[in-house]
Each structure stands twice: as C-alpha cells, then as structure tokens.
Image 1: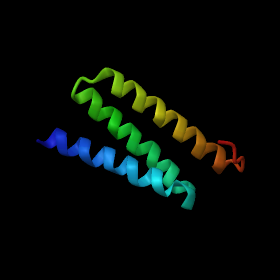
Image 2: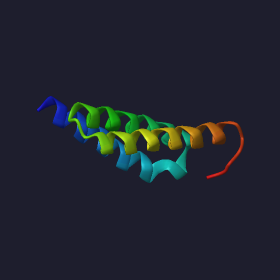
Image 3: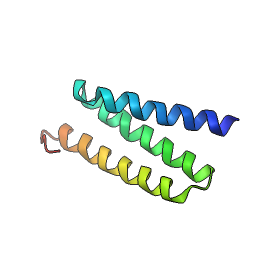
Length: 75
C-alpha cells in the first residue's frame, strides 16, 4: 500500500509539474525530481522498462532546467 501511494504521488507530481513548466523553471526542476521519484517507484515494483524511461526523462528535464538556468533557452 505504501509503495502504491508513493507511485501515485510521484506520477501525479509529474503531471502537475509538467503542466506548470512554462510558468517557472522551478517547475522544470520539480518535474525532473518527480521523474526520478517515478523511476524509483518503478524499480521498487520491478518494472525495468518504466524505470529506464523515467530515468531518461529525469536527465532530459534536469538538462533543460540547467540550460535555462545558464541563460540558454533551448528545448
């Protein structure tokens, strides 16, 4: 039950922060964190394809946040 609740919160956070990304670069970083949490959840339930995809999304989102932070607005 705790693992399922963690997954629900992680994926819900992904949806909310993705929807709010254009408002602030802080939401891009929050989206990256939510993707990392979803990846951890996927590992906990042994869903390796989901874990891999979420880890990739985490890296992509973190890179986008880093680029925005550095003053470059690509992507």
